[in-house]
Image (cartoon, rainbow, N blue to C red; front, top):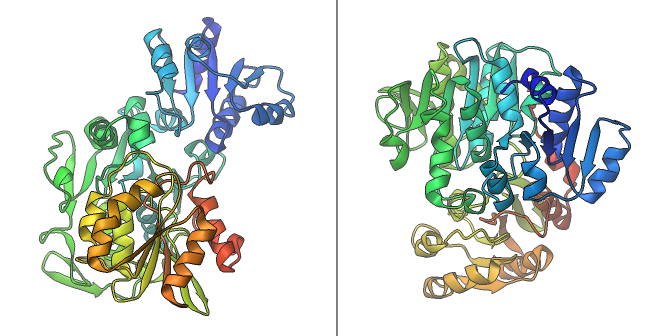
Length: 472
């Protein structure tokens, strides 16, 4: 669906609504108003947001602080923010009565697709872990090669805001599992689509792991990209057949892959990656995905690979804040799965580590994390916190005890940090890698990471800037 179709729907008596007034919602509002200044719109938002909206003095915008199935069903089209699941009961009831739910991603992709649906020179990146780093690294390498490149999407710049910026030769778009379906229904086809990995995640939004995997893979199964870049080491992706796309795989001997810390293209050694600003083997593996995507664009990936040395890591992702006393503070607030926490621990396996885990409970199991204790990972201490802290504590208790790992519970982040400092006896690595979302205690992982930095004595504003967003 294109933005231009909304006026036709309104002329036919259909009601158009926005659901959510975060950055995505505001971007959708501005995009519509740019084309149709007087198009009647309904906005479903919170009471404080409704008061904020009143200050816009837009007589064609009706802000409502309550939303239910009847209110949604009264709308022909609802443009919802990505975090709002279409599986919510009120949304499902409205869908049953004919309401169409789309996102800003749908509008942008439909607007920019060619007649054959292709989004030329557009690379879409998704994956349970590493998609933000991969997207920004890809943009960095393209820019280092002299190509004006846009970086947008889930990483922090809504796609609809790209229309307010200069044109770019390439567009790198990060998509969450909330947005891959929005692209799929738009009718647009990415030039290149990258899928890094698939692990259980966002079960509260998707309803089940099976639905999560299906929604995530819609980027390549339904959107039919010209080229699909897939991780050969991921069991789900390695078994995937995509007859409508050219499939290129990374992480295997014939393509871009790692042997230890050494980067190879087939049998040709390219460079050592140990000193690159890409903490963790998983991030260096994502470099292989980036180089495979660059090749799929018809560019010389080998010539651009060296520019990874000047990449600036993103905040809240295995971010070393610095040292206070003899404790090094590492902010991995983006970690929202137990698998991500294990990957974080692996980065510091030769150091004495106290890890802080727990947050919003969305039902993910910690069995794999528990099984790894004393085997692949052996932190000095684990401190649980947050809504699912008690459940994690109970699951880890026996394995931690057997492995000789100190396990304690904290009421909040501040107390968890005090316990971690005590467990480290003033020396080691304090690692915030929660393996769970931040909702409840914090608005998002950024707020959680900023609080961690402030409690550790670092300036949260300095550590939080995301480099490279927009067009450069």
